[in-house]
Image (cartoon, rainbow, N blue to C red; front, side):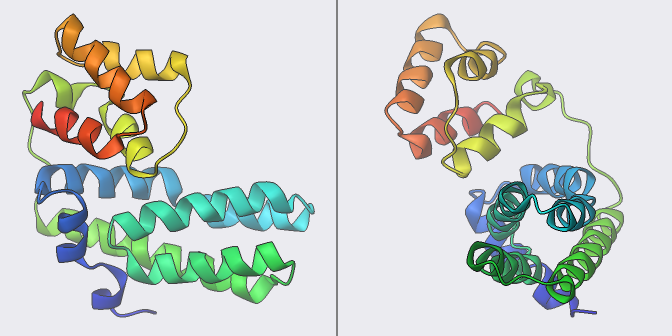
Length: 186
């Protein structure tokens, strides 16, 4: 098992999220919920020779874990990603990735329990079901199609002019400025 200090670098994660501890808590909980099954999915894809799909799952895990300060998982995903790209991945590396994910998810649960619970949020943007997904995709510099972009932006508490400006920023790949505007709503 990896040491807790290596599993989660809180200061780094907070730096990545502009010091927003509430956002970090929510993102960690969401990460644990959505990514805990990724190693099993990767193992199944690898065993079925669906390497491209396995690489995509590992690469996404690498990016998110790095941004959230989940350092041991980031390193494990980085190594597995490199091996999959080179076509030399094996069961032992996938097992290490799975164990590191399990340790990371346990750490997230401990951090969450240590903080008692996530507070109730009253801001409409924080309750927005697309808010976190939008922020995460922007942070990953991920392409966002027009339909998704409009879905995200229309669900924010912004005036029509502010929505047009935000859409323009995303279309011009000015993700940092877009994230800044969205986070001010929280």
